[in-house]
Length: 240
Image (cartoon, rainbow, N blue to C red; front, side, top):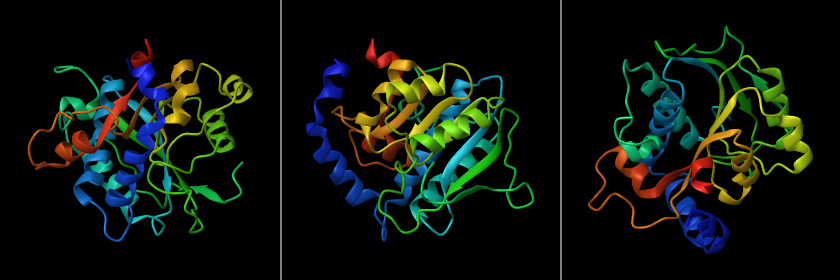
């Protein structure tokens, strides 16, 4: 069962290996980073088939080339009319179907207001990594920052985080509440997701793969293949 898998943190070694071989720069696995961005876009579209407005959380553009690659692929996938998942597994849906570091919200005059007929990036929150290792693909978003963003953007449909999600304590979960934007994320740390999964505020998170074998049985050829080989989705339904 997945609950048992969550408890077995022997997966930490494989997660660490994935991080050091696929995400550190230079170099990094470009196709995998593109696959993560495309998968996040596909999952966002699947969650909001009638369209929606989202806030994206990432780093400053100079802080992480790997994150820039993910975000550019995410935006490109949202621009494609009628975009579907690179693979069903990548989308995670059945077939057919206060931080000590400054940040800012990119003002409208600065940002490329990316939209498709279905999903619009309404705001982009960029964290300043200040060259610290805790900030990067799948890691860095603090509890205080998440609570502040959720409270400020109650009119949005989702917060899509490229910098992970925090491990919320019961008081923070209560402050987050049950209403407001849903959460979709790429997270390096599976253990941190438990409270948000149990509260069902987390729509879905892409995490380093911990269930094997992967659905990719031959050499990966596309960004979607690389995502399915190295990553997987986790949702509240997996806890049932």
